[in-house]
Length: 452
Image (tube, rainbow, N blue to C red):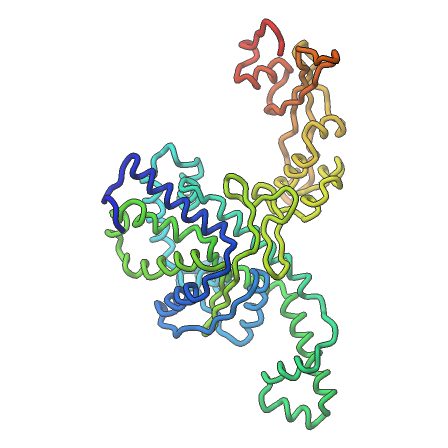
């Protein structure tokens, strides 16, 4: 919309930068949701499916949203995507897969358009993954590629909250029980007449508690709530597809068959991403999450914080991450608890790498029983194997930590020489090769007149 039909050169780069800036801001927004704007956009999606405007339920976090969805599903019909299929054809799991996108664009159409966007981006701006995944690759090229990790972290935090929320609570306040009992309609006064008010309150409170525990502790309910969670501000698909029109001048967008129909689905999603957090769609009810109070990211847009939650919501839900990798809170808050044994026992490769980074690679070499591979005139080469933990597919092979130990050739004023440990690739076999690699040279090329 607007701009040159086929922007090229500096104009294209300028438009790509502006688009990336806009969506990085949306991903990282911690402002209060713009409720009227989000509700109007969601209502327009319902309208495209011929459904009346839903009632809106606002919740403080994704965890509250998935549990509200589980409860609401008891009384509201789920809205299923048209294009989802089961494991085989339209198999038994079709309903589960169809929860993923209730107002879905045709997947093949979206993938073709994403591929056209990717092919229009200058090659030097594209990451390697763009060849296999045009959506993720294009998002990375625009500069909001960390969005997927933020969404994944939010989903993980919401899922992990199930155990806490499923814990039975204490006695209900009598007034709250009586107000809630209104859902029974005429059955409530009959129950009171039969067994008395105090006992009726107790029966209803216990029944409500048991239902809550059953729903909140149900892996099916939680899984469906996660599956049905729409990304909101962490949408990647809609901004990439809209780039075909709003960055490249429309020439990729206009000729597409079914453009008008899909535009009615893309534009509302852009509006939701600009105004609210994740959301869920049921027939007659839309559940929408507020945006987080805190969202910390690294320079690549991945959720990250070295000493506090990477994401935090108003209801106390927190998510911890180290450069996009979800970790337990203690790894961030209490890194002193990490030991060599902790590292060796960790089965998740990504989390193990975080543990090593937090513990210190040099410290792992010093304290972890590293093997001296080569002791040469330019330094010493150390290798610390990572234990191979069994998996269902056999032993997991992981790259060892290999470091070269070198000394500063110039003594400090007190006569001592500083020692440095430098991480090098695991295929190197001698200290000379390792030191040469740090200078971008091969072993034979490294012939310094004076070691430094």
